[in-house]
Amino acid sequence: MVKKTEIKEKISIPENITATLESNILTLKGEKGELSRKFTHPKIDIKIDKNLIEINGRSIRRKEKALIGTFIAHINNMIRGVTEGFEYKMKTVFSHFPIKTSVDGNEFVIENFLGERSARRAKILEGINVEVIDPRTLYPLDKKTIFDSLKKTGRLIIVEEAPKTGGVGAEISAIVNEEAFDHLDAPIRRVAAPHTPIPASYVLENLWIPDVPDIIEAAKQTVS
Image (cartoon, rainbow, N blue to C red):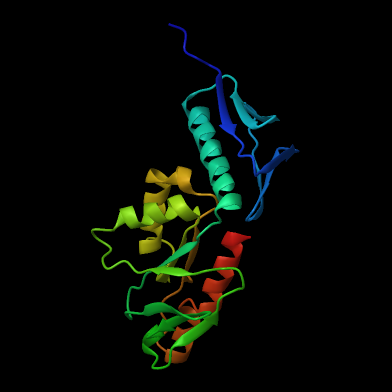
């Protein structure tokens, strides 16, 4: 039996959404705003036909078939984003001082950072709502909570006090890429310490461990 080498998929465009496609960039406009994303692959074509978005694949193998599924997931997320809006979630983890994070009005509060008595506060950008997920254990890891968040947000920021290589953040990132890649709408952002020994000086330790501005910058990058 000859294997099927062509795939055609169709996604319906809701009545309240305007869709345009130019230079492989799909733009959707709806009640909640406008989203654009570039879709390009030598074996996959996307076109708009009336109220349908058509995805056509040629000489498809397993890798291209999986990518078509990813394209469909991204487009459905875009449709949901311009009709219902997105909710972004950021997961924070710690490996030394047990930090506590919360939201107070329009501020994101980090308590017990490096054992500090005074809480650190960061203003939440206008138009962005923050929900904090604080895993109680790293093993077993509550993967379901992470995956459920990804299905709604399409974004993931991992914050840890250790260097990136061989850290908890690397393990969480690997799990997400292996088991929930199709739910990602943007690259995973990791906020971690530099690849140097932990300074003995308390002052230098403050500079070594990721700080509030580092988290804010990662959040800006992941929603931009």
